[in-house]
Length: 261
Image (cartoon, rainbow, N blue to C red):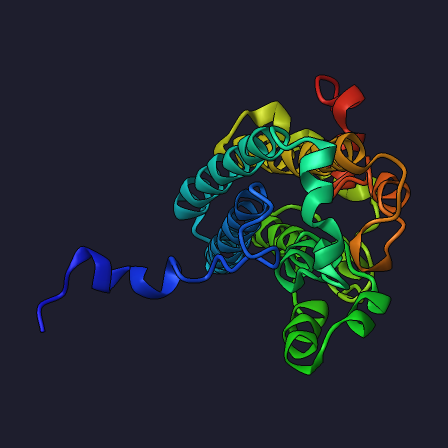
């Protein structure tokens, strides 16, 4: 059988996966499902790209790492743009099917938690919220290297004086800032090399991730206000606690010294 556009993309299956709980009586539920399915597909692609990015750094190959990071940043823009689409749904339109979601909640996105772990935001209690299959995937991410750790190893192989205790840190712990690392980063910025460009792109990634969190909070607040979220979460109040937590604190810490290393 010849491969076709539809068979290659499995469109017969893909387009049957938007099953509404309201049986079509709530017009906006289809939009809600498609947006979140798209998020999960982009999360899958981001995981794929960050894994490749880490491998490139581990191989000491900066050129593909830069191209891959640029792609990641472009995908992040798409994720932000999708918020604009979701915000076309009013509170009343969401409430028309909200109760039908039961215990389903965005907090249960295993792929988003994988992204958090890859970016260094690791919390063991997150593992307890998932079933066995998802928990096994998350456990592997939890104990493995983050993007920032891979970058510091790359810098060490490039001759930067990264402390041994930083290179050999407990990978299950959140990333902690290091004044020694900050000094090395400031010196790299003074050279204006491809490595300093990579640092700026990492900062873009961090900023866009924080921006996505902020847009998510405001979108939820706009649609459900201060009410509890689906699945029994505290909704907006919990989401606000996640704001302004940088993935790469050392890159933010050197801003005031970047021209005077």
